[in-house]
Length: 575
Image (cartoon, rainbow, N blue to C red):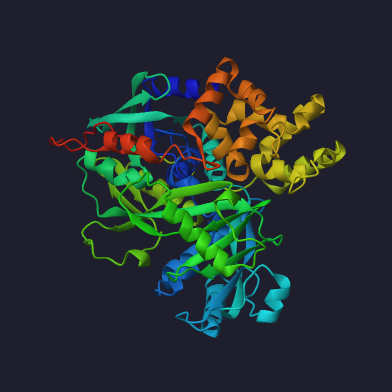
């Protein structure tokens, strides 16, 4: 908590920032990392935790958008494939190539050979960077993946894309941490309650959501990276933008591992949309749905769960069909899809892409980011930096590369030290990978400090929370460097514990209270009780606190008031 309180004091200190970013999802996080890394005095706030909305509900896929081939949006596919390759190259331990084995059933709108030819075009669009596509026979598929129900199938094809080995929220937070390493003043649970512009400087009114403290921060450029709430934020400012959002709800279910093979099983659901079974360590993520919604806090419904279960059961050979008792966790979030603001309501919703758009008002120092996805994040960061420079802000280190894992020499030094101390001997037998591999992927250069802690006290290598892979040293690292404000921040976003462990298992873990004591000190019991109060277990599944009445109340508080506002003047936004 000391890191957060220190940064809030810096925000309130009266210093004028070059850029202040509202919203700590993937767009806000990469904007902060790019700007701070290139020498721009940057601040970042989020009304909740970093990656607390759309950025923690993805499919964990880094892909070139093969589905956009069908709408002939080849330019977008080409751009996304190049972006995917870039992330694979610069994040080799985090973003990894993975095979997609796709099954086509009778009556589908395209013949398997046509789709297979399309995968070759897709491969060429990606500069032949990945493994070549494959057209296996159904008998071969039955041997390789007996879990697939091939009875209704007329063919299969296999191609490559990429996925996040860790969870999406962790990937986003690492950009936030990178930004802080470069001098960005970042704080979660800080709400924007208004902003006015005078003499080329924005005065942004802020509230600490944890203490109720109100203060102001000053900035020359204000960046709206509010994701699904971007339109509301612009309405409050009386800002007219070229783009706006249409929202799509997507649902995933987490179940026990369905196949031991590290590949994505892809199908087309009963609506003709891509439907996945995605490996997640010792678990499998299945989904997704694509439902039009106007609610940025859309909640999972019984119909959503039934749809996902029905589709996966129809496409797999399982000893027992999956039912609600098999669900370990759920993921439900909205995708903000960028559209022309004057395009009307009759647009083909299912054909909309995740392409990002950026609207700017150079004169007033205001930027709004629409759409976007994990795959395209580096481009967003670079484009925001270019726009901020056009607004007269000095970019002191324009050639600095603000993303990517440390250089090979740092990596080699970490693994050399790990070998000298036989670190992997501490790997739990139930773990899905070696301890050294996981520590490097999650903490990069900071993992060397974790080695030092383990050398000083071998107990730091012990798994602290039973049923997970997280060791005591990681919890101490999180307490010091990762701005853990609520227990959910650690269990759901800095780690993926609440995604892969049942709520009852987490609550009954002997080590959870010790973890809370490390993270929160004297507030440990309060934060423990708060988490399980906000995440009641209903039918064996933890209920998402962003859904239901709490979300409705949040949405109500975020509605713009009826009276007119001056240009550049904001009212309270529940961000």
